[in-house]
Length: 457
Image (cartoon, rainbow, N blue to C red; front, side, top):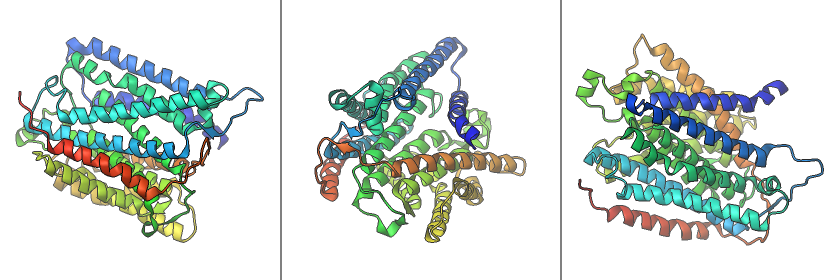
């Protein structure tokens, strides 16, 4: 077991590189004339990712010299932690709404790259990205002004702020990659182009940082049912809704709204991908978010709640934006896995017994019993047949097991975030503070959307 634990980090690195390369291939290759620039961009991204990964290891994981002590005093006061946590989640909400809005307008108006740069969906997305970068910068300034010891000691005094700072650092590099890469190979070849995958991953990290900041200002939770949720749980649930909405949009948008002509000619990019990829994305993401939801909030039933809220939000947005594709099929197909995960949690917790990641993975995979028949009805491609059903079951099931392990590991870490000593302790009235921040920001976002005028070429 110890040997296995020592291999976790190398295996995660190798697995991450494999997924990155696979996503690059499935995302589509540019024309031959643009391949040198494309390859250079991929190599540059890998290099920067390795450098930032090395920096993260140095400040957060590298063994400290003998005698070095960590002052567990956060550079951020309690009130600032909660405010930044809520604002990070709202920034992610701007990204999720902006992503659906951008998809809807592209489908409706077909504005090509370049002329869509400053339209309102993009402005909303940029505002969210800049807000996250700003909060990361504030964390860095606080660490430098109030922290003590070496750089590693300052980062480890409050690892959540440290991870947020590193996320903001990576965003500074990632923000210009999308327009630069578009200048290399033109319009997006697919929804999950490499810049989009990178940005979405960083946004998910920012959401997790927001949840962790909020958890560190709340009493440690004990396992309970959905009926015992409190105001402390509202914003973390909203964060998980944003993650599920945006990640699944990125991964499955290419399968939306296929035309009869495209199905006959089979010239679209989805026909160049394995048929098992769509159920893999749906079941794996559902299992990851389901494990994250229940473990982080220490409440069974939250996975299903997050799934239902995301499904409803998707329908509200696509109908509100008058999108040509007004369905939420990908999110609907998440629900079987999420419900089964909650059933496992409810049964085990009520017996006062632990829930293993294997149980979560099996529950997520069993959702395929409902997902695969419904997929034939909701998506014209791929279709489950006798010739591909084995791979349609095996690969998504393996993905569910992997995401169950990852989701439980991250969720447990979030739930166990301790309350660091802060420079000042201020009593926080959770309901009032949450409403005071959420309501004005949501009003501004709604106003920004409703006052937008359709674009013109």
